[in-house]
Image (cartoon, helix red, strand yellow):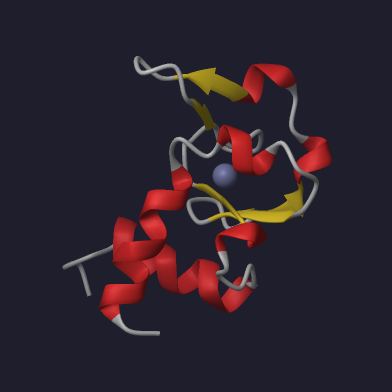
Amino acid sequence: MDTHQLENAHQYCFHNGNMLKEEQICGCFYCQKIFLTSELQPEDFRPEQDGNDTVWCPYCGIDSVIGEKSGYPITAEWLAEMHRYWFSHGQE
Ligand SMILES: [Zn+2]
């Protein structure tokens, strides 16, 4: 996956409350856990200043959760690639 796609995917990890209210597979690219949105608790949906909810990962507490309805593949490989790009950028 190229850099542009990794950057584009980042928009789905915030203001994603509405999208993630529908049951689907989702993954956190910080802790790289893959889980079902049915595991999310109401307190994992936190409102932003503009009124949209952002989902915070119930496993690591970081706002890095992306659902499959974003169109991206929620796989271990893809989450690892996202993690490398967004959290380890420039350190390799
Ligand atoms: Zn996490």
